[in-house]
Image: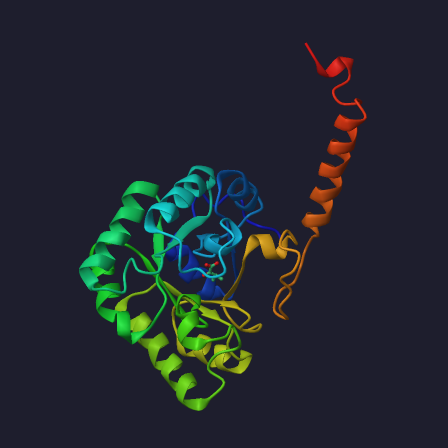
Amino acid sequence: MSVNKEVKRITTHILQEMKNRGEKIAMLTAYDYSMAAIVDNAGMDIILVGDSASNVMAGHETTLPITLDQMIYHASSVVRAAKRALVVVDLPFGSYQGNSKEALSSAIRIMKESGAHAVKLEGGVEIAESISRILTAGIPVMGHLGLTPQSIYKFGTYTVRAKEEAEATKLKEDALKLQELGCFGVVLEKIPAKLAKQVTESLIIPTIGIGAGQNCDGQVLVVHDMLGINKGFKPRFLRQYSNLFDVMNDAIQTYVGDVKAKSFPNEKEGY
Ligand code: KIV
C-alpha cells in the first residue's frame, strides 16, 4: 500500500481515524537525526524515541540506565528530522515511578526541551495518577503493557507475558483503564496474539503491537533490529528487512583496504 505523503503531520486524531477506518499504523524507533530523516521520509506514522536507546545506542544490557537528559538529547535530534511522523518519547526508568508530580515534571521537560509530540509510560493502573496528571497538562500519553522492559528485574526474563489467566485479566483491565484515563494509544509487547486481538477489539483507541500478532491496529519494531544492524538479535517476532551489518561492514572493510593500498584518495579526490 502506498503512503499518503500529502498528510502534513500525523496527529493523535489522525491515528484514531486510521483505526476507525481499518488502516494499519506503522511505527519504528529512531534515536538520531540521520536515521529519523530516513524513517520519516519512508512514510512512518509514528517515530518512537524508545528507551531502547539504552541498549541500541549506548550498549547497555537493559533500558534502566538511560537518563532523562539523554532521552531529551535523542528526542531533540529526532524532532529536527521528523517532518511527517508523530514523535513519541519514552519516559525513562526512574523519571516517573516516584510520584505523579515527578512524572509530570519529566514529561514537561521532554515536551519543552525536545519539541516532541507525546510521551510513553510503561504500566497500568499503578501509574494511573501520573498519567492523569500528565494528560491534564495537555500532553498526549501512550501506554505500554505486556513485556515492559523497565520491569525486567521483576520479570527475570524477556519471555512472552500474560500467558496465565490472572496476568491476562489484569492486562485487559489495565488497557481499559489507560483508555478511560485518556491515553491515545497503547503498545502491547510480547503477549499472545489471541489476547492482543481481544484487547484491540475491546478498545476504541489504537493498539500497537510488538510480538503481539497480526490483529493489533499497528506494529512497532526497533529500527536497528529490522534493518539487521544488530546482528545477534533474532526473536521470532522480528522480520529482518535488510542485513545492514554486513552491507556496512563490507563498505568499511573496502575503505580500510583502499587507505592501506594508497588507492584512496585518488588525484581527483583532492584539491
Ligand atoms: O523502547 C522501545 O524501543 C520500545 C518499543 C520496543 C515498543 O518501547
